[in-house]
Length: 428
Ligand code: AMP
Ligand code: GLY
View 1: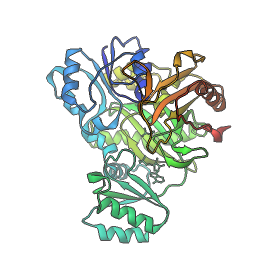
View 2 (view 1 turned 45 degrees about the vertical axis):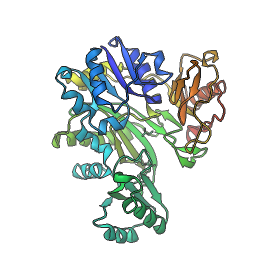
View 3 (view 1 turned 60 degrees about the vertical axis):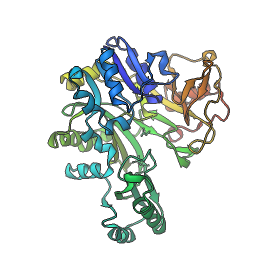
View 4 (view 1 turned 90 degrees about the horizontal axis):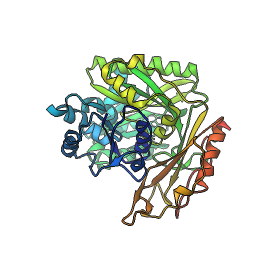
C-alpha cells in the first residue's frame, strides 16, 4: 500500500516508524513530516489543512491509506472532503468524519454525547452571552475548584482550573465577553472538578467494532514533581501499574462500549482512533475529554509497546474484521522522556543546532522520535519547536525504561535543552 501520513510531530515520527515496518507498506509519504520522519519515508511539502492539494497528491501517487495525525484537519472535515472525491472512494482514511470529530472539536458536543449515553463524566452546565448572568450565579453556587472550558479548539489552552470564585468570574468574563479564544470561547462549559489520577486509553474503531491498542499515563507539567505550567506532555509510561485488569474492564464496559454504541445511535461515521482522556477517581474511570486522534507523546510510548502490525489493523478497520484482530504487546515497560527547548512552554528559540545523533550508543530497545526538528539550509539538524525529541525505551521496570531514556538524553545536546528527570517517579 502507498501511505500518506499527515502531521509533523513526535506522534507522526512514531507512526511513520511503526507503519514502515509493515509488510503492507510500499511507499510512505509524510506531510510535512520532520527531520526524523525522513528516515522512514519521503517528506512532502503539503500543509495539513490544504485539502485540495492533499487530494491531488493522493490521486497522483496512488495513495491507498491516509492516516491523519493532528486534530485540526479532522475537525475541519478532511475525512468527508477526501471521501467525497470520486477518485478516492476506495481509499482507507484513518480519521473520523467532521461530525464525529466534534467529540474533540466541541466540549459541549462531547458532554451532551456522554450524558446521552450514560458515560461517566463530571457534572456540567454551559453558557454563552445569552445566559451570561445566569452563568455568574451558577459559578457563585458552585463548589471549588471550578473547571472552565472553552467549547472549541484552543490549542490546548482552553481549560482553566479556578481555585477561587473571583478567578472563575474573571476567566468566565474573559472567555465569553472578551472572546479570549475567539469563537472557541463564545460558549463555555463549566464543570465539576474531578479529583484523581489522569490516564489515557486508546482505541481503534470503525464505528462498530473496536480494539484497545494501548494505554498510558502522561506527565503534563513542565516541572519535576508535577509542578509549574502545563505543556503538551513531558513524558509517558506504559503499561501503568494501577491500570490493571479490573480497572481496564471498567473502562471498557462503562466507557469504551457505550461510546462506540453512541456512534451507532447517532449515526456518527468514525474510522480512526479514539483517545479517552480519563480520570481515575478511586478506581472508577471518568471521561475528562475525548480526542479523535492519538496523543503526543502517548503515541511514542504505546506504539513501541504494540507488537501488532498497525497497517494490518487499519485494513481490518476498513474491511470489518477489526473484532477478530489480535492485539499483542511487547513485554516489559515503556517510558518516553521528552527533551524540550529552553523556555518552553513559554517563549523559546528555534533553529538551535542539535548535537550529532549518529554518535549515540543505544540498544535496540530504545528509540529516538523527533518532534520539533528540521534540517536547515546546510542540512544540519536544528530545533523547530518547543518539544524537540521524545526518547522511548523498554525495560523490565518503569525505572529501568526511564533510566535508559535518560542515558540516551545524556548523549544529546542543544543549547537550552531541558527534560524532566522524574518521569514515572511514583512507580519506583
Ligand atoms: P483538556 O484541554 O480537556 O485536556 O484539559 C486540560 C487538563 O485540565 C486535563 O488534562 C486535566 O488535567 C484538567 N481537567 C480537565 N477537566 C477536568 C476536571 N473536570 N477535573 C479535573 N481536572 C480537569
Ligand atoms: N498529550 C495530550 C494530547 O496529545 O492531547
